Image (tube, rainbow, N blue to C red; front, side):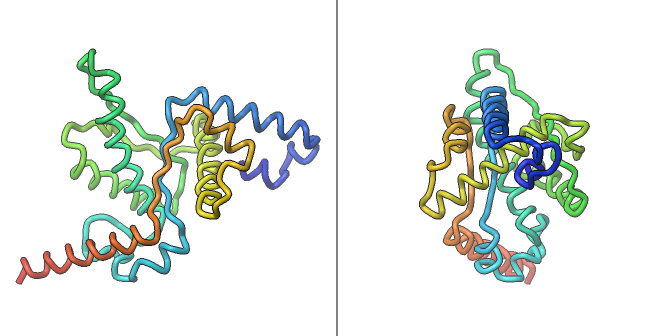
Length: 212
């Protein structure tokens, strides 16, 4: 998507009509070839302003909160477990079958080490049945579906931004993507971030009191 929007080759030689037709085709493939898409997001400006530095440093907890990426990573898995147990299990209920899920994230060397550690902590907290089977980081060249995820993530961010600005659903490509209503976006507002910070500080103070 970044290459497309930068008019990088081969898109720089395409007409506007060809570019739009191509993008609409990709959106239909991503939309119709995907059971659902789920994303966790947080406005970075609110993140920087609403969370105190001691929260970002982790407050001595097991999860890393030093960057919005980690916060969204953790939010994604928390929401995904809700979806897995309340939606997916219900659809497979008559088979008495509980799906295990393997995750492939795009290579992100800046965050891979911390994300892998957070994944193991998350499993300990929310996954007693070991439903979150594995976590892999790979390239979009080797894992082609990551390119679909890239398109979905790009438009998820646009949709959220336009919702915050009161401009939602004016973009025809956003409306095209959302036609099946299978795009599930979760994000923290500034007020929710402040409430999260309050609870995190309270939990830290409680641990200190217990230690004393």
